[in-house]
Amino acid sequence: MTTVQPTRQDLANKLSLSGKVTVNPVFGIVAPVAGQVRYLDVRTPQSTPTKPTRVASVWASGKAHRIEVPAGAVFAGRLVDHGSKVPAGMPIVSAKKIGYGLVADIDGAQAYQISDTLTTVQAQIKNGPGPFPCKVLGTIAALPAGTIPDPPAVEPTAGPSGQPSASPVVQAPPPQQDRTEPSEATGMRLVCTAPANVKLINGASATIEVVTARAAKALVLPVEAVAGRQGRGKVDVVKPDGSRETRDVVLGLSDGKVVQIKSGLTGDETVAVPGPDLPPAKPGAEGDPSAPMGGK
Image (cartoon, rainbow, N blue to C red; front, side):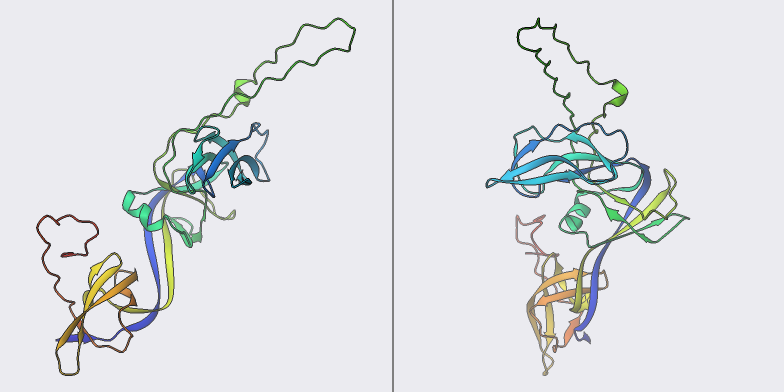
């Protein structure tokens, strides 16, 4: 019988994504709190903004929470109707980064791994620069098509009292080339930007590595010693007399080789490898996503 003892080490969850260098990528900005969205009329800038642009507010409990497009990007569309009540974290504004960005499409499983926090993102251009830090822009959520309303008409100025009033002048809409085209719908994806000194070429392939979480001096066991996943598992603790005791444990991060034991062990135990066999699934429980591997 093979046995191991829990050890402690720094642990990080990492996820590798395939991406590409893209010109003027679109990204989404979310509501910071639940509340009512009130948009502002945003003028089309004549050059790339060097300061954040305020585009909306989310009102909650009588307080306005500002929504700003970051410097270096332009407003690209409203994603909900003016006055809509939205939950926190919902995309409400699209923006377009002026210049190069790195874009990686993600699927649903990957989205839930990285949706809570993005602590560290590194990128490597295939056969090119890297690795280098990549600053994340906006949300990873899919975006609906954006809308940009026409600017409000300017009321004609009334003439001085007692003088004949001039015919009102209807203001012409801005030239088409001066109007911002609203953003198109996107799927779930991660958008990030490289440092200014990194040479990028549009269309170049890249690998983007996301560190989704870290744990310092985590109590860990080899993955072979643990039965189960997604937060809960079981291990066989070997007693001094050689008998086994199956214990429930709470699982944390994993790098594919070891898994964090958040509770259930003190660190002084001897644990059998491989881990215990889980009982077969109960009739009708097959496919239950909440069940650990091998059963409920």
